[in-house]
Length: 602
Image 1: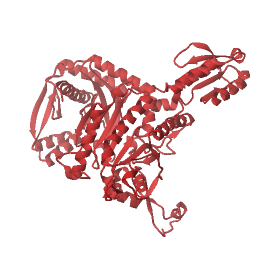
Image 2: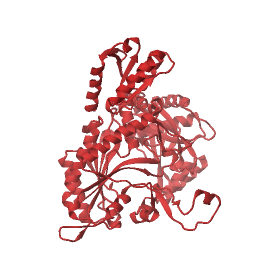
Image 3: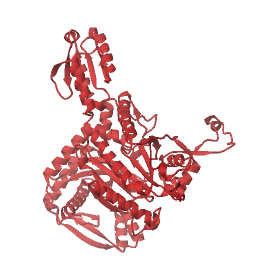
Image 4: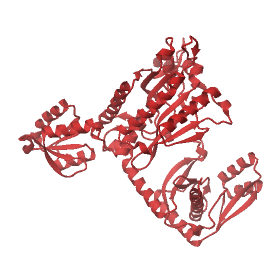
């Protein structure tokens, strides 16, 4: 960590301590849990007992913090024997601190450190600034409240987490606040509702999005592009069921090593009616919702003998998978329980690996360029195994050395902006993870390119090589979007809902000035549809002004207002998205304009 980051972390940690001191003055009986520095500032988890704290209280806490800062109080560190510290926290009723110290004792610690700031003393390892007066009053702010279970366990008490932002300068803080405001405007959950794209319904189930007609059209446009480009790129399509026999998941190893992300088995030996009648199961079979597509693709591979001449095999599937997520961890489309992976598996020989990897890298960059992302901002992470703990990984040294080296060579040859991360590889193979930035600088995990040593061994995948001997193929997992749900959330937020013409669910909105213009609008809509355009007609009994405001909110690229003048002319009155001016354009020129934008993906 460089010096600037060290200073920033110390500043943020100190502010967390200052905030706790301020809260202690305002509410003397609170119980403190933990208060670390985080990426954008700091937080503290606090048990307020019966006291209800709201956003309106943040101003009072912040005011008290600034008073403490103005006093220039010193941060004074002391050491205390661990048993003495336990007794101290027990006597003061600080049950969370007491529990933390007991854990330290169990781990072999004999003493703990405290930091004192005026009359407030807190268990803390530090480091802190020399004094509160070293903190500038305009570089931080308290920004939100949240609930947090003690130690992240939902069986424990829910605490109040108070978040603060902190940066080295006021300019950095202001820039971050501006970015947060922009992010809130772009929030895909908010826009999804406003633009009638999707919603998540409690009755259907949390983490299971329902796609409305416009959202489903957006999905279809993206998926059609995906299929078209995969077929052009030499991929073949496969399909697999949503559930698989328990035996499959035991063979793959998911039953043991992935069970914390899977749902319990489904009993197939009886009907729902049989279960409701408490009838005994005559013949039991257990199936599981699939968390991955991989074992199905392996079984397709094994369904017939394979020769070295058959490679490479590039099999792709947009397959919906299901993974267990706690309620509190679900978030819009970015964290769901059922999602569709744009999955592919490439089976190839050792002499084909480098070429296939480079093709995938080119494909990834092409995909994101096509959707308007700046691929120069993509950061790539090469995940390697831990050389000091090799026994926890599948495969052998020869295989790992080959695959790690070829991934490194591909990343270098393709001039990717990559860093190596030892110990970050999955147990079954090394990988390249691609993270891209949106228009406001947020980084998103999307594409993954992953070797797998586990499945070929577990399923005994073989082919006949040019010597007539059995040989293991190399298996590459590959996802470009990661999942459709997360990628569509990224698209919505990247464009703030104002999609390029080629993927706009509705490209043209026709606004009828009055009822007598509706029939003409409907005919014009049919004409546009015959040209391949996506059109909607607002024939509602509202004022033109209200109709225009609705169309603006829907972020449709082109709004056409149809009145007497337009009905009696070959010219169209067009209002472009983002403009409040109308322009007159001949119909043929307008059609050519849209076709050009679609062809150029703008």
